[in-house]
Amino acid sequence: MVVLKLLKRNTLILKKCIKEMYNLSLEEIKQILRKENYPVVIPLYKEIVVDTETPVSLFLKLASKEKYAYLLESAEANLRWGRYSFISFEPYILFSYYNNKNICLVKNGTKKLFVNTSLFDKLKTLLNLYKLPKSLGNNLPRFFGGFVGYLSWEIVNLIEKKVKIPKKDEFKNIPLVYLMFNKTVLIYDHYLNKLKVVNLIIVEDKKDNIE
Image (cartoon, rainbow, N blue to C red):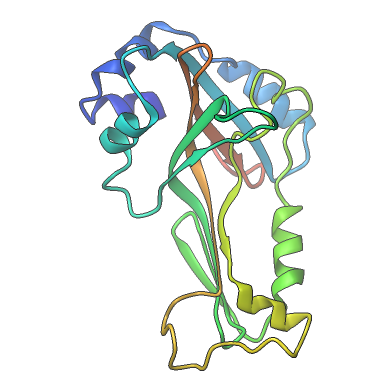
């Protein structure tokens, strides 16, 4: 599980997770999977106190050496600082769109290339594919995982042809769109000084073994 992996990285602050309970038991997860349509995403998490850590210190300890990771700070209306910070790593999906209209999709380590494919059609299909069972996100912030990355200005050319796109030799090998969907998300609550360690269980079909 994610907590054990984090502990192996010598992060002492997360040792308390061992004594805590997850929000769902294995039997509850199995019951959910019997009722839901696939693919399905189930957020499994523990909550711990982190009064001696900051989002930056946690990122440096856990994700600084990860190739695909991010640290997001939230912003809310009329507040200088948002309530939550998000640290995430361990990608399940990597999505990249290039100047030659090719899409590279890496899912759970398996790479697929889609040639001359519509960006928006592929994105729409991908974003609508993974469903969250009702009520499972009630005790989590509005954002607790999903696709994070960038969409470059140049993709406006797909809608408005007057906007020029870079020449093929410019920004070589840099995608116009790059998104990652990570399995591990740490949610730092600045108000309560607590951390939710979220592991997104992604089950594609009934053949997957969640154990």
